[in-house]
Amino acid sequence: MIVDPNDKGIVLTPEQKKSRSQRNIAIGIAIGFFVVLFYVVTIAKLGPGVLDRPL
Amino acid sequence: MSLISDTSTAPIISVAGPGDYIALLKPRVMSLVVYTAIAGVLIAPSGLNPILAFAALLAITVGAGASGALNMWYDADIDAIMRRTSKRPIPIGRITESEALAFGLTLSALSVFTLGVVANWLAASLLAFTIFFYVVIYSMWLKRATPQNIVIGGAAGAFPPVVAYAAVTGSVSLSSLALFALIFIWTPPHFWALALVKSGEYAKAGIPMLPNVAGPDRTRRDILLYSVVLAPIGMLPWFMGFATIAYGLLSAGLGLAFLALAVQVYRVRTGEIADKVAMKLFSFSILYLFLLFAELIGERTLMLLNIVHLS
Image (cartoon, rainbow over all chains, first blue to last red):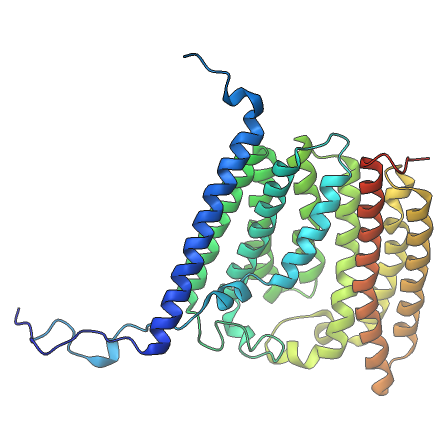
């Protein structure tokens, strides 16, 4: 395969870059929220049982 | 030779923002779902930890959003034809169909899994069934096949209080089924009132809504019949003893007002005034459901706080 050294591949327009970064931020927030939700739900479900474990 | 020689096969790079994906979830339908699901949680005899109740409601709401995204994926062709839906993210080209499908399926799986883990697997199964019913039974099959589409499809919109009740109690009860019946019977007159005015749009998109298949007269008669049934069903929470007399009186008054408007729709059949009356019924139907659930949520909250007692 011959690679053209001048070929820059796909170049994103400023609009595409902006929407990509917005999507990334939204996905980051959603995953962060999901992690916190599961942490809080675990604590709520186990309650004091969190500390009740054999050493 | 480069690997990509033909520029026409260059990948389409998305310019969709988070707002487009939120639009895909049908936020207005989601708000109705969360509203009716809150009532489902509150009518349950046993309380649920507020954090778990919040997580369960969130899972139900996201599940509803996921089914909205899958509906938009499947209906993109007809959405492009109808004015009301032509500005949705897929018809305007901001999100591709496959992106919507992937988004909808991912959120469906996540919401069902979350509800199962947070609440119980009966509620999760009911949520999965609701998504399946809305996407496969309603969107893929009934919507384009029969003028009774929204009669049966309306069940999908009626499930959220049942799912929410099951999330709290692990069971299905007659009280949660009463709320199911209320939304189920409310749906046809609500949509048919709109379809009477927009029948041309539905016909253009090839959707067999009742007015453009059986005619506006038959639609008016059916609206009236459903309204007669709706009035007592709206009062069921009081009859069954899980709402106060205040709810009973409110539901009786609103039911009669609904019926009076349906009679008007039945009698006024021609001219601009007929469209106006139909739209009035459509708007009132939203207010009807909103007020009944507001009363139910309000009084059940007060009961939870020991301020109001039944009987």
